[in-house]
Length: 177
Image (cartoon, rainbow, N blue to C red):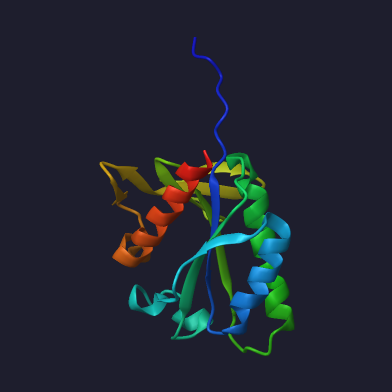
């Protein structure tokens, strides 16, 4: 019989993209009041260079930023965090003058030393149900000193820019442990 072990704290991050530049500051205020200071923030990546999946519902130009938080979390907090970010998406939609069907997308996940996990409301063969209608997937794994994509990894998470930022996040997590 194996011993029950509890996971170590992990680094919470969110990916935010929107055609509305004011969305980033709006999310930042809410996120920092909820989860503590943002310790790392990526440059703005042109999400539309990776896919046009959201072009119809969000618009053709979608800058995307990744942010990591100073306070570590326990992995089982992810369903609650995903539900919170979904609520924020609805709140932003109700108060913005942007005519897009979906004016903001906020995707939370976490990084531990071996992997990057993303939360989702959508089930699929490679996703595992967590709780509260939320699923999770291992999007990247860290092995042999680099990030390795899975067959289902989104193209943006396979890019050098994202992976450089995620490596900074991983190094921050190592320093916190």
